[in-house]
Length: 246
View (cartoon, one colour):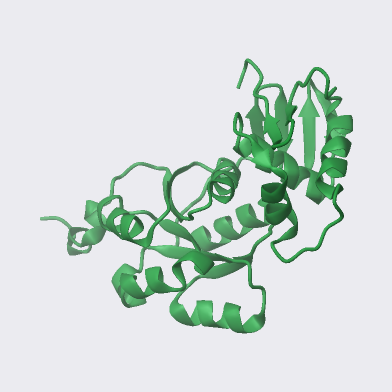
């Protein structure tokens, strides 16, 4: 006769070794950045834009961790989950653009395990995810290096290697590269870049995005006339150009 402890909802969970992470985020740019950052660990992600779809996934897909946009759900997702002991296996990290103490305390009161203010650095998100998973007694794999074709993104040393040559990037440059790479093949507008890296309330100079893209290109040795990684789409924004190996 089996252990009674395995006859609960735990037994209904798939036994695969990968962590299942549910993203409740309606902005594709943000969802893709979170997904790419989570590739540093052995995780399967599923991004859903509505609370209704996410709650169905909680019951059918049985995620181990949910990363939710608190500004989108306004706490409704957490309320719908019920009491924490009913979902003891589901850890929750909240994302918010409101960094005040009141917002964070309310989020913890509603049951999040951690909360992160947008914009955030990819390395901080990865560190917090690993910490939350450890607290939930679930081992989480971690690989500091992501390989995107000829690019190697080292999140631990905050560096990028191109064809074996190491480049040192600032946090902002690394965040910009992650954002563009996460949305490979899709045009990311200047407003989307501005909101994701500096925040919606930031009052920026008119060319601040272009200057940082130009600086990143210099380090990547990316000629804008023959784009190898970052393509300019006139009147729209920028697009990450995957290499043949991606």
